[in-house]
Image 1 (cartoon, rainbow over the protein chains, first blue to last red):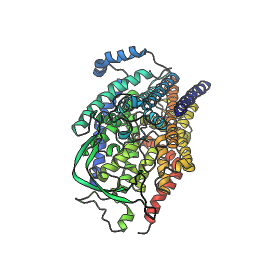
Image 2: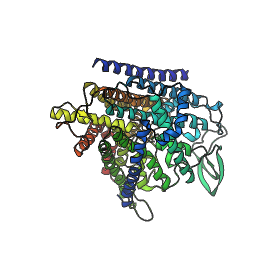
Image 3: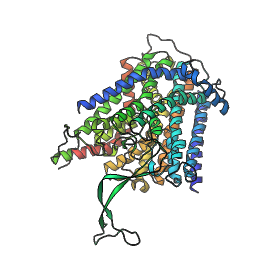
Image 4: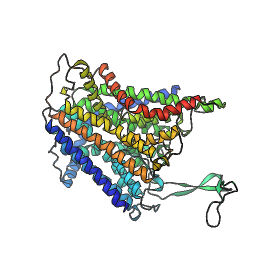
Length: 31
Length: 603
């Protein structure tokens, strides 16, 4: 159970950072 | 402050500078793929790696793909190191029969080593198998440092190129930084360290007979093993003695070299570079300081070489050096001055032939005040975090220096790669502020700095303070955060503030009064390290992409020169302005309050 929580936390951190890249790339195109 | 302390610092900076210039040129040639001897010798191996991994080395990418590659590579690294710790008990190279690391500690350590932080909630010699140390932690020491170099070079290319849609190939940059820069010098340094007494073996712990019998007090226990207490509730103790000592063995030197060269800082032992098997004598101490500073300083020359104007690199280096020297002098003079409370009791704290003098609490006698205060300053002005003394035991002002150097973003000289790209972000901020003052569109190295670049700069600069201050607020507010504090009051606050500053800025050193190997701190600091690393690194890559796409503006009479003293002052001003505005209120509650309390206290 703890493993599931921490692996999900790693994947969530990845997802949040992936979204940052996508968001900044979109902002760059707009500007 | 003593002559020896000043001389040691000046000699260190001088020696590093001597090597950094040619090494910086070498790094530039390697990363630009120039046909130098090293690349010709390693070409076959390099090509074999690309073939094995299915990489097209000739294909460069834009910043978005570059950032995604960094992210995917790092995430896979975290998952691998996490898994390795969770199953180490069943894997080979575990002669001490350690069990699997707990889930929360594995999470923290995996992120810590992948992000080049090397914060260590665990005690290495009693937790990690040799396989985990070597295959998990040491490998990440190499590739996390190589990632830093790759990102810094990508940003430099952004300045150097014009009208370009690409900033490089991450896989090629990562491979070259590891193969031609980190591996050769780490191997060389490891061999030198072994010659000086740093151990390198796969043996289990060794029990040895000590020179004299040690007598000590140990708690008396009942038949069930519970401690016996007296009528007042105090533990009852009994005399005991021992003539044996257990010495921890392991492959230390191979990890020690890259620990310093990659500005990683994660020690094989819990005591880190204060342990005689990691740092046996004054020479190894000097070599470790040299190794920490070499690449960060060299990268300023790499920058000057790739952008085609060596003076630009010198200007950045000058800014870094002035910042570092100013704060190092505060640290060393505070530690040499000693503790005023002890002085009031008539204790001699003056330096003499018989003693270092000053505040020797938490310091090794083989290093003394000068080498300890210098190490504390060097390890926190870079993102290393290795320690040869305990920062928690420094005087309030002495402890303020490492904490403030970390909070400034470790830009003088900074981590491998991260120091240079951090400082260049401040350079962009500096020219932006200067542009506002004179009403011109800011430029740096012929590139106009526009709205998108400044938005990215703002994100890169603001993410870390948010992580640090919000994290500290949680640490102070939560029961689970306060329970780990060893010293209540201002010093306890400093311990929490230092922990989040260290994690958020990817330093890894600690104010070790804090018991941080708890689910709360392992999780919170793990997240602080992740966001402190990638949410800075990604805007930096976005700036690289934006700058690379721009045309170079011609130099005119109105262009602000960025290689002179004015620019250096502007650069230092930007760093201090942001650092002071952001962190001084928090520092006032910690080391500043403690300093005032200590100096105002009665004997």
